Length: 143
Length: 157
Image (tube, rainbow over all chains, first blue to last red; front, side, top):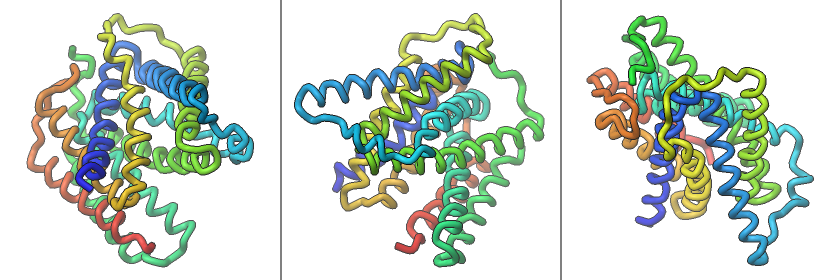
């Protein structure tokens, strides 16, 4: 359990680390350039891992890829904008505020998607959570 | 390294806030897409496919919009942000498959992000400016993480 907790916290810290590193790169290459390098290096690493696993006998599930609905292929393009925006923001409002405001946007939009998909079940609690988050955003946005 | 000018106007602050909120919304949609690839083709392709298509999209956008370098040099480690991102996907999907489940993994991930952010600002890690959090910043942190905890653990199963 301690290991699992450590992995989950580390995963969060790594999100911050990669944003910080990409933010530094964006100072030289621009936000879009940083996003390009982020995706290229990630592709090379994951491609190498896929290849090594295939050589070791674990083939990637390419037939599953054929069954993936077309909309899901947009994830990479959304990711480009996500990384570019994060790199741009972290150099301007700092790591803490970027993390907090992106988390807020993710949580609120997630609650909206949940309400659209699952209806009113649990809506009062969701509304409470969203209001508390928006109060935090309002506080953070005053300068 | 004063790459960012004096952004003190409150309107600029609002633009930043809206951009960050929209970025978070984008993340929700991105996770939805990538989870669908993972469901069909497994976690490795679920991360490789968006990274590869993202490389193409970013390369295309750069070719169309490119403003060449800004004269600032980047240290070579600055090109490795993608490695950290690739490891994140694997770590979080492993943690989500333990007793922590997705909700616990998400909540602890928020703690990790906030802690890293505070440390990075405090010491100006990795070449970005140092910043001291104000009381207002810490109050905002408490509200945003508190509201997120309500959403994460309050969701009907």
